[in-house]
Image 1 (cartoon, rainbow, N blue to C red):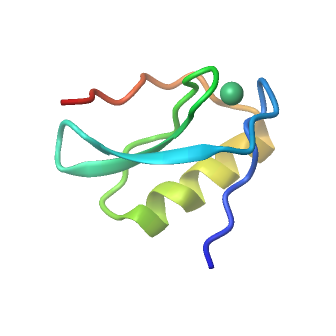
Image 2 (cartoon, rainbow, N blue to C red; image 1 turned 135 degrees about the vertical axis):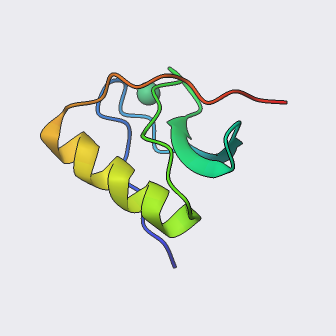
Length: 66
Ligand SMILES: [Zn+2]
């Protein structure tokens, strides 16, 4: 079971993982669309999101959806 931190901006707990446009994965909030950094794997993207939310450093681009 992968635990993903809730959104640091709006408190949304429904966090999604999307395949980004450059062969990677990024976690993003389903409510305010705040997004984490693009990583090579889902696990890495979740780790990056969790780390970023704890540091409150989120100001990443929203991953492109196709
Ligand atoms: Zn949010």
